[in-house]
Amino acid sequence: MAGYGDDPTFETWLTDNGYTLPGTAPSPAVLRNRGSQYIDSVYGSHFVGRIAAYDQERQWPREGAIVGGKLIPSDVVPTAVVHASFYAAYQEATKPGSLSVIGSGATRVKRKKVGQLEVEYQAASDGSETGSDLTPIISIVDGMLAPFLRDDSVVCVGLMSVGC
Image (tube, rainbow, N blue to C red; front, top):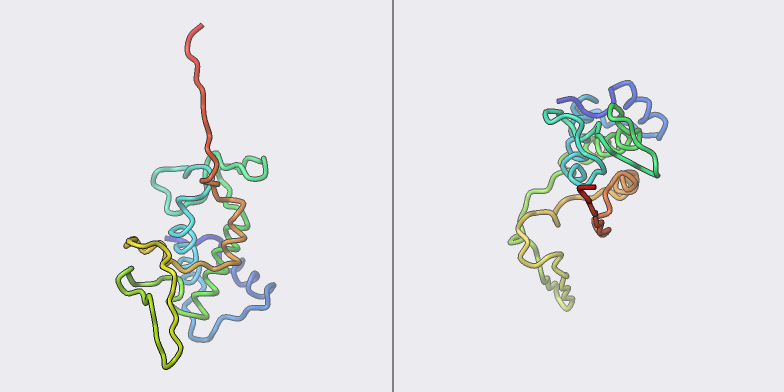
């Protein structure tokens, strides 16, 4: 499965942003694949529009995706999506394994006491075992993708009339 973008564009993006891959990092193609996998798994179900083909490997391109009042062509992957995947790839290169967290609600620490100091943490979602609250979020990626995400808080009502 190929990642968003291509290796030369990824290399240019790294240079333009002043980033350098560590010498121990996997190949750019592997990193792009991991970054794209992160984008698709965390944000894929929240993107506007719908996938263009039932058997496509990635969440983009999409059909019916409207951003800022403009329809994104169904054969285009927005530059922001590509760059967000590049940033996630860079994150993976500099902190291997940081894009995935293994755990469950049962492993969370609710209260911790060290000497006189005691700290109690607020549970993100009591009873949740899905791991959604364990998902690592990269704030810059979140911001880059925000315009391409559905606003699930908006309620839409449709009315259809059939007949003469």
